[in-house]
Length: 81
Image (tube, rainbow, N blue to C red; front, top):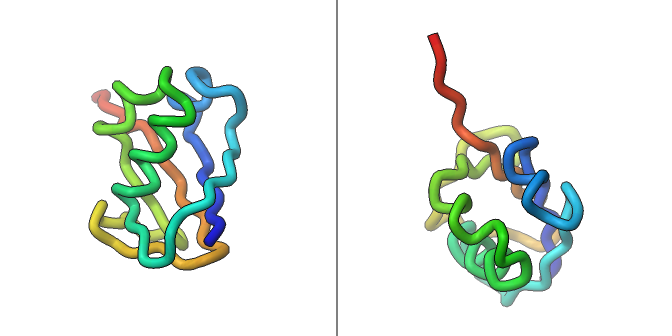
């Protein structure tokens, strides 16, 4: 199945493009998508562990299964005050 991964600004700077298409096995999870993305874009590997995954506008647990056509956004947490 194919899913799109949209990288937040902090991650997009490390990748070749801010929007990436991944081919995953049926039943793949958010964690599986992150592992595949790290393999395809090694510069992202260190930052993906802290990324906040969002699917359909809602925070997604890493164990959440993805469906064909989903868009997974990976956002960088922001701190401040």
